[in-house]
Amino acid sequence: MDGALHVDESVLLRLAGAGPRYTSYPTAPEWTDDFGPDDATDAAVRASATPDQPLSLYVHLPFCSRLCLYCGCTVEISGKPSRADAYLDAVEREIELVSATLGERRDLVQMHWGGGTPTFLSVEQLQRMHGLVAERFRFLPGAEISLEVDPHVTTHAQIDALMDLGFNRVSMGVQDLDPHVQHVVRREQTAEETDALVARCRERSVEGLNMDLMYGLPDQTEEGFGRTLDEIVRLAPDRLAVFGYAHVPWMKPAQKALEARGTMPGPTERARLFGLAIEKLGAAGYEVIGLDHFAKADDPMAKALHEGTLHRNFMGYALAPSEDMVAFGMSAIGELAGTYVQNARTTAEYEAALSDGRLATIRGLRRSPEDELRRAVILSLMCRMRIDLDELEAQTGREGLAEHFAAEWTRLRPFADEGFCRMGERRLEVTPTGRLFLRHMAMVFDEHLHRRRAEAAAREAAGEDGPRFSQTI
Image 1 (cartoon, rainbow, N blue to C red):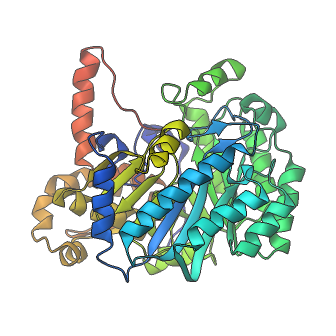
Image 2: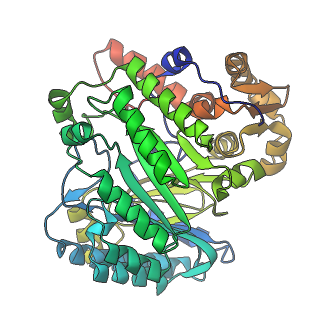
C-alpha cells in the first residue's frame, strides 16, 4: 500500500464510463419486484437467529424545503415542517414491526440518518425520531451515530439537540461554494453559513466532520472548483467524499433543467476537475480511501483501511463490524441474512402500507451461493484493497477459486499493466493509485453486469433501452 499517488488525466479520461458503486452485490437492477412484506419478514426472522451480532441502522428522512436540481436522492419537497409528523407515525409503526421480528437482536454499532434533509425536522421531531430508535434498540459503546445536514437550513439549536442525543458524526452537503454554480443548480449556500456550522460542530466537540463535494456540475471550472477546494482544506473536515455528478434525467426529470441553465462539463473537464481534487486534497494530507472518499491519515477510517477492518454497506464505507443493516423509511434499503429489502419509493405508498399494519416492502433479492462468493471478492477488493484467494477459500469454504476465476484474473491483467494493482497467481494488491479505480476492477467480477451488457447490446440493436449507471469519473 506504500507509494505516491500518481494520476494521469489521460487515464482518468480513458477509464471514464458508467458503472455501479457496489454498495451492494448484486446491484439494485438485479433485484425483483416479486418480493414483498412476507419476504422481508422472513429475512428478519432468519437474522434474529444471531442475537449477539450487532446491527447497523439507517433512517431515511426524505423531506426538503427546496429542490436542488442536481439531486439524485428520493425526496419530497414541502414547506411545512408539520408534514413530517405523519411520516414519523409510519416510521414508528415500521420500527415496531421489524424490531419485534428481530427478537433479541437489538444492539447497534452504527446509525445514520439520510435524506432528503434530516434537519428539515424541528428539534422536537429530531428528538422524537431518536427516541423511536432508542426505545427498541441499544447503542453499543463507541457506536457511530451520524446524519446528513444542509448548512443553509441547519440551526445551531438543532446541532446542540443532536449532540445532546449522542450524535457524534456530521456529514455536510457542500457540493461547490462558487456562487454562480450554486445559482445554476439552485443550491444557494454561502461560505459563511458553512463556516458557521463547522464552527458550531467544533464547539460541541463533534468527533467526526464529513463534507460532500461534487464535480461535473454545470458551469464548473477548474479555477472556481479550485477555490472551493482551497476553502474546504481551510475548514479541515476529517473526511471528504468528492462525487462525480450523475446526470440521470431519465430517472430524475428535474435534472433536465440543468441542460438549459448552464454548460455541462464533458469527460475531459470532469477528469480535470477530479484530478484537481486529488492533487489539492493529497497536498493537504488527505489519503484516498477508495473510489471518491478521502480521509486524514489519523482518521479512524484511514486506520481501518490499513488494518483491513473497513466495511461497505448502503451507507457507503463504514467502520462498523456489522454484516446486517435494518433500514426504515420511504425507499430505505436494508440488508438482513443475505437478503436485500427495499421500501416503497413514495411517502404516500409507504405511509399507506404502515397505516394498514403491514411492511412497505416492494422489492428485494435473496443472494445465491454464487452471489455470496462474488460479493465476498468485491468487498475484499473495495474494503481491504486486495483479493487473496487463499483467504477467500477459507472464508467461504469454496475450493478451486483460481480455476473458478481464471477468466476474471486474465481480465485484471491490464489494470496491473496500468499500475493500479500488483498481481501474483493467487493474490492481487491494489496500489494507492488503484484505489481510485476500484469500481472498474470490481466490475470484472460482476457476472450480472456482463449479462446485462450483452442484453443491452441486443436491445440497442433493436432500438430499446435498459438500466443505466452513473459515470465512474
